[in-house]
Length: 420
Ligand code: PA5
Image (cartoon, rainbow, N blue to C red; front, side):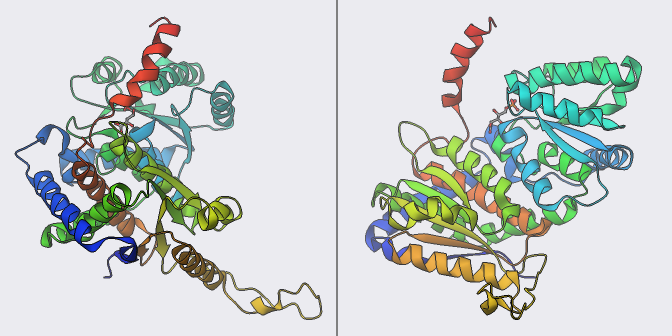
């Protein structure tokens, strides 16, 4: 089976060879410290994907119950507590599985009202509240509203089976689960939110949506094996090159670009992973994303011709799942006859190839992450690759990629205003 591969050939020409070697030496040390499980064990639990033992089987049983009985499933969580599951569900949800609603990721009244109105039209509703420390305002406040909603719809006695809580052992959320007979799933303490995709945080909602978890976990394990097999691997090269281009060459913004809208929510996960991990100490590469070809008609102009401070990381899908061939329409005269008989797969690939070439020639260092297909197995590889690369990159930059103190600043004022 093919693996994802990273093509550096359109980024390397922008590097200074000797300086890059120096950064790479630092990245190799960072990698060594990452795999040294004796150190920082309290933040590196994510390096081991969830084993498929008893806890996994129990989680799958509950997911099956919901998949078979629910017509609506509400995923309540924010940041690392919902991004990964949403990325995969939006890309690969299986037909015939419950409609997934997202709550606890905003404080907007109209957005929450729309969720509640959507639920009004559903018969069997289940919710999963994911909160590591259960202090975050968005999921906590939405759990209140949804709890009250469920009690009103089903009565207090009937809601126990409908609520699944994902939190840390010993947290208030676990007590609540015990007090009310709700199912409780573990959010492992040594795993930060944005690194939690391969734990029940990411896996349980995916299972409800019919995602093939064994394939996803196999992909992650395969990437782990590949990274461990060879110290001079793609994660180290990517981390070193992006840090060198940033610190040595002034490329301070990285744009994730994908030509499959199925990857739009993966891009949000990626932006969060790198943004929260690396933006510290008044430095860090600013991560952002474009969805192509649509955004070529907006940010494409800037990327081709604006300030030369961008690098671009393309996620390319070799064999997309789906094909539409353009039928000839002789005599209609729309001047698109050059597309007669051409598959959109090839049109999209042409647009991507042309964009990479134009941006590269226009002075944008381009990385290409090539996926044979967009399925669970390659999602597993992709998640694992970027988590390791991000951790190595952050360590190479000399920051702690596992904390996020900066997000506390606005909260202090907000909590004061709300009288907490
Ligand atoms: O990556 C992180 O650690 C954060 O984005 C958290 O996931 C996010 O703030 C939500 O935290 P919690 O699950 O405690 O509500």
